Length: 388
Figure 1 (cartoon, one colour):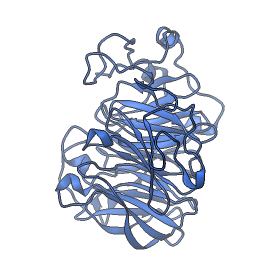
Figure 2 (figure 1 turned 135 degrees about the horizontal axis):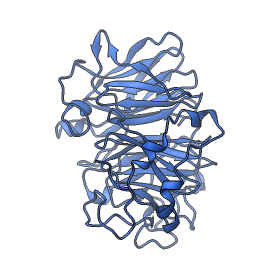
Figure 3 (figure 1 turned 180 degrees about the vertical axis):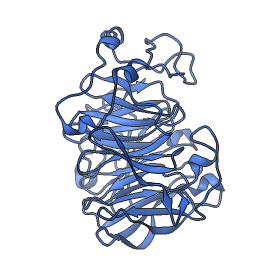
Figure 4 (figure 1 turned 45 degrees about the horizontal axis):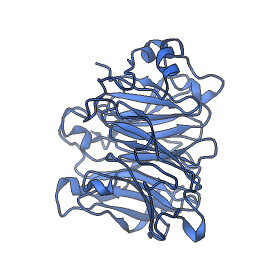
């Protein structure tokens, strides 16, 4: 059964059947593989009616969050109360920015990625086995792909192609510009991967991804199965040969992954705390030689306040790390922003557990946030690094 969707305004709700069209004009848009039949399969629940799979009896409201007043109290600075945060006085938020819920109706939203050619965000709805598309020009939400093999993390390569980590497929795939799907990685040393979780593409075209076991732990987010890889590794796929090699093998549960803007640092989240109270809930940082596929060092960059964990992260052009927070203390639900030195700059407080995020918008200054059943957005004065 397709989960009901909600849209920002009445005109969109009443015209959805005639407005389901393919985005045109750019090669990356051709990668969508979207059909009118798939889009029309997404039923619409008007605001104020029941049906959305949330804890409430009604869909969550769209628009600025309840209680928002400029400056938005959902944006917390570690420097001064009620003032924007940022390095060296550079504000990450201005006084006229507010956190908005732009879409709702998902069961577990994850893995957002922004496609500038089409001005849309793709993100996973893992239990519903689909990838969603949010068009930022008119706020239209539609189904991009279903089934999605219980997709989780998504990113974009330098040719505008979608890279996806799949739980039930136990693989990493690439959606070609003609809509066909290429398997990038599904085995290592002759054994199946566990359940690829998140990925990032380096400037040389190499694909780096994490492989915990979350997607094979049950039937809600994938297909229950035994792990074939004894260690839960971080892998690199060579851009020319396609060879897969392990770059880090000492994580409990490797999760989110990103590079610094100069690609000299690799950040990887360990959510091992989900497996036991003595396990990590932190971000680690490594020195990295992208071309050689080598990492060295490795130290804790930021600890999360247990029982909360961070799941996904992105980097801005100043080297700040923006990461999701959730699962534990509701007061920590949202986003944290750290300097490259590991100092906490500020927080974005949200009413739902946050899984992942990405920068988008024509200036790469709009932060899109996957929070449980909803997609949130907030404009920032920071810009996302060129790497998605």
